[in-house]
Image (cartoon, rainbow, N blue to C red; front, side, top):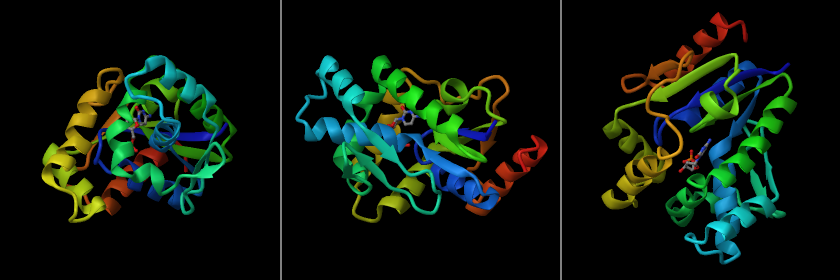
Amino acid sequence: MPKVIAIDGPSGSGKSTTAKGVAQRLGLQYLDTGAMYRAVTRAYLDAGVDPSDTDGLIRATRAAEVEISTCPSDQWVRVNGRDVTAAIREPEVSAKVSAISTIPECRQNLVSRQRAIIEASDPGIVAEGRDITTVVAPDADVRILLTADPQVRMARRKAELGEKVDAVALADQVLRRDADDSKLVNFSTAADGVVNLDCTYLTLDETIDAVLSLARSANVC
Ligand code: DC
C-alpha cells in the first residue's frame, strides 16, 4: 500500500509548492491534479469546443490522453501527445478551466485517473488539489486542508505571476475561480479527520515542517 499525503485548499494557499517540497523531503512522488484539469482545458480549447457546450466538454475530457510527471523536481504534462507544460499556465487556461471542473462527468473521469496514479505510486505520493482529502483519497494517511487569508493568497499568486498581472486578472484567478470551483467541492472547511493548516503567517519552510510533523505522527516517515 503506498503512503499517501493529501493536501486540499483554495487558490494561492501554497498547496503546490508545499506538496512538492514535502515529496522531495520524503522521497515520495507528487501529483498536481490541477494540472490534469488544465491539460484537458488546453485540449478542449485547441479542439475548438465552446466552454458552454457541456456534451462537447464531456467528450473532450473522456478523449483527452493525459500523461503527467509525478517526479517533484521534474514536472511536465502532455495531452494527446503534445507537451503542454507551459501552455497550461497561460491566462486563457486559468480563465476557462472552471468550465471543466464544474461538470460532474468531467470530474468523475479525472478523479478515477487520479486514483489510479495514486494507487500505482511507489513508495507513496503527495497529491494536491481541491478535492483530494474528500473525494479522490479520503483514506489517505495524512489529510490536510491548507488555507490562508484571501489577501495573502492574492499576494502569493501575484508573486508567482509577476508584476504584469493586473488587479482584475488576479482577482479572477483567485477569488472568482474559487467561487466557481466551490460549487461542486467544499474546500473552505476541513472535513472530518482533515487537519486545517492555516499558513497565513507561516513561511514555506515552516509550512513544509508542519506537514512533515503531521506525517511523522501518522507514521508516514
Ligand atoms: O490548482 P490549479 O489552479 O492548477 O487548478 C486548476 C483548476 O482545476 C482549478 O480552477 C480547479 C480545478 N481543480 C479541481 O476542480 N479539482 C482538483 N482536484 C484540482 C483542480
